[in-house]
Length: 360
Image (cartoon, rainbow, N blue to C red; front, side, top):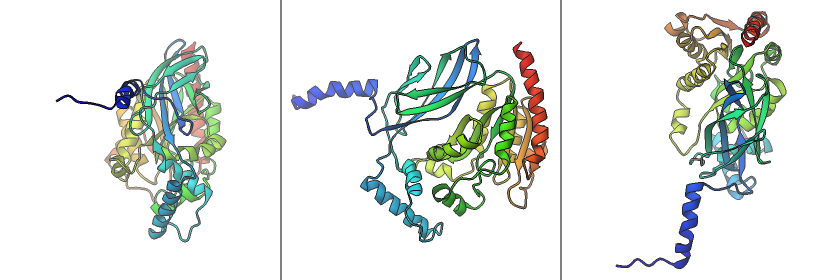
């Protein structure tokens, strides 16, 4: 039997094949988020950069988004997270990123300086991750931009081979989040102003002035990154950022409500391995399992983890387990940043001198 296809379909098939093979360009209503990254030196003038872009369509103000916002607000009311909370612009702006359409099969042209890199096609979740080698004579410590035209702009820090890096948690370490109270946590995410932990911006700026680089590792989802940008940019040194994948339509939804320990440990050890000659200070809080995660990382990399500091949240500390008790690097608790400021500045000064000597 001879198969007869409509002429329009026959003419359309080659275009469909090319789109699948080559990927599609961006539509005018699509947005690209470029996440902050860190670059590792491969050789003089060559830096390896893991790039991360997220392609979405927000559909702000559409009927579906308004209905979704009202439905979400109603659900939060039924869960006693809010009580007769009005629909605010802040709430809808933050919720939009959770409801955004994730765009697949998009291929981007990312520009760093005068060099252009073509991305792989975006997968179904819209997140594109790939690694490039960038050539520049800029020095370690420099922060450079990368962009997709005027649609999205991100930043990258060139991190030297030696020196001090701070790996920092975000929630209840540098930002008040109330992680131990899940209802307050969710309410704060969507409705409240974000506030820094008092004294932490000053401490981190002091370390930055002494040459430290920063890597922020958070268990919060990527959808919260646009809301975090003002708090981070206005108060803390620039640094790379790791967050968790979350989408209500796939397995990440279930995994997100499980322990974040495995995710955090992998994110931290990936950073330590990328910068194998640097020393690391790990700073977190007692709200969840940062002490245990950091102690385990110290056990894996005892020569690179120089110190562990845990901010005390609430009146009690989590019970120390074998991982914490046997850590080669003591877990030190603090209530106020001033308690660890002098120790950290001394460590940063020592490592800054070591790094300078190594570069000569």
